[in-house]
Image (cartoon, rainbow, N blue to C red; front, side, top):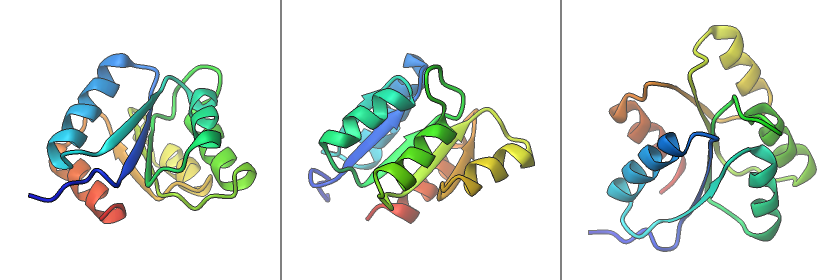
Length: 126
């Protein structure tokens, strides 16, 4: 079994329940992965100023700074090309376009289809 101890994932979501669900699936899929949790985009940016990550998972609807703000800050302020996957309840085409135009690499709608989620993760982290 492969160890993922050299990989870091940042999970930004204001819902503790959703963070726990994502962490459960990430740990199950990638044993040993290092995961950092953020409760909103601003919290995520503070973490990212201190450390590099291999993947960012973000909700779009969060207080203080939403997912689009986080994505824009990662791309334009921090100047990083870290893969970013949006995980959100907003499934309308305009919401997907807004997320992708702000610089996201992938988009998964809630409730999460675990197979789709895992395929998306594998696409961006190896």
